[in-house]
Each structure stands twice: as structure tokens, then as C-alpha cells.
Length: 208
Ligand SMILES: [Zn+2]
Image (cartoon, rainbow, N blue to C red):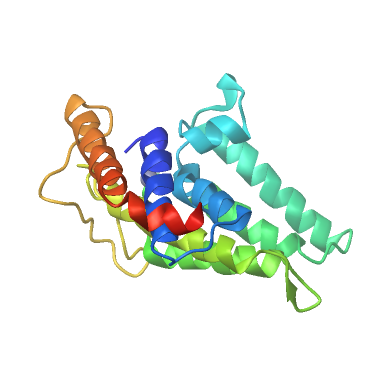
């Protein structure tokens, strides 16, 4: 599934969760939805999120990804060991995982999502105070899980429990992400969510 489809389905599913009172309507929820719905594709150099992070075409390949995130990891570890930047080793681990993860490998898994969320919480925790709003974390995890479930429509499949299991999972109905069939699947999911919102628009009335 492509980045725009992840983003639109993530935002619509989050809107439904907000409408049902499962998530608060605040900036944490919205930012968590945007980031959580596309961040897992950071392991793919041509993904939407990497087009935002490093918008230089010459860097958008496997070597560019290794140099960019590997360099960030090295700089983070250096900042910890040489400059005493307390969060440097956590950032170093995070960038190292991104550097080493192939597309739809450890980052595209439930343990990977949990690991990234824990690392983010530790990075943004200062003096026992978590700087990230709770709504951001819940929305981030919700959209991350949704991303994984949607990627099961990809014929290449997802190693949902990596690194503990290398079994590749996919739905019986699936397609390669650059195929016409994949566009139809994306359209069907978006239209289903949109129809649900239209038919249940009363769930948003309390928010108005
Ligand atoms: Zn993905």
C-alpha cells in the first residue's frame, strides 16, 4: 500500500475512533495519526516519509538510506560518548534499527512497532516527565497497527512477528503495491471508511 493510501485510511480510521470517543480530538491525536500511519515505511528509501525526511533524489536509494540513517546513528552515538548528550544512545539505537531494517522486516512488525514506541517515549522523557501527549502515543500505535494490517494486502507480505518469527503473512486477497489491483484495493478500503463516516455522521455531532 502506498503512503497516500496509508495516510488517508489512517486519518479516516482515526476520525471514526474520535467520533466514537475512543480518542480525544486534539493535536496529539492528529499528529499521532499522520506520523503513525506512514512512519513504518521509513525502512523503504522511496517511501512518502523518506521523500519528506530527505527530499534529495540522489539519496533516495538503498545506499542513500544506509548513509543517511547510518550517519545519523553514528552522530547520535558520538554525541552520547563524546559530548555527553544523554539521549544520544537512544537516538543511536533508533537510527541503527532504521539503517539495518530491510523493507517490511523488523520495523514492519508488532515487536518493531512496540520497540519504536518505547524508544520514542524514552527519548521524549525528561526528568520522569513524558513530553509526548498520551493521545499522541495511543493514536501513533493505533495507526501503526492499522498500517501493518493494511500492508497484509500486499503480495510481498509482512513478517508481522519479526524478529521472533520469519513467517511472512498476507491476506488471501492481495496485490503488489505498484499494480492496478492494489489501487482498487486501496480505493475500496478508503470508500468503505468514507461510507461508514457518511452513514454514521451523527457520531461526530457531539464534537461540533
Ligand atoms: Zn508499509
